[in-house]
Length: 120
Image 1 (cartoon, rainbow, N blue to C red):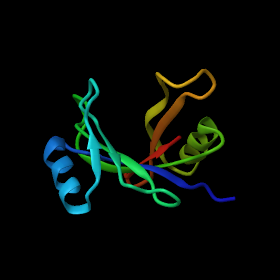
Image 2 (image 1 turned 135 degrees about the vertical axis):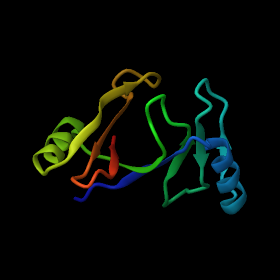
Image 3 (image 1 turned 90 degrees about the vertical axis):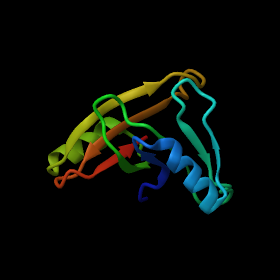
Image 4 (image 1 turned 90 degrees about the horizontal axis):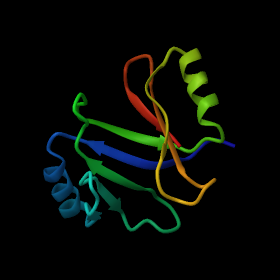
């Protein structure tokens, strides 16, 4: 079975401006009540569609748009990406929170042209 897209992310040095823009254009509810001021986007999706986030880049980062694909094995998917000519700008991390065994695991890879994608 193909892997599905489960999350999108918009990163920009002007994150607050984009948070307001997408809230105005699409009516998305955006919650920035967290230490990183990362805007968790509720698109209103129920039976279909995905949720996302809008935030600022890290100290060495720049703006980009990323979509995250759900996979059974993040390490195996990263290995396939590298074997196919990609690179790994963000190795696998486990986000705090959630129940043990149910944590959020993320990683990112770039295709041979430098476009970035996420895995979860």
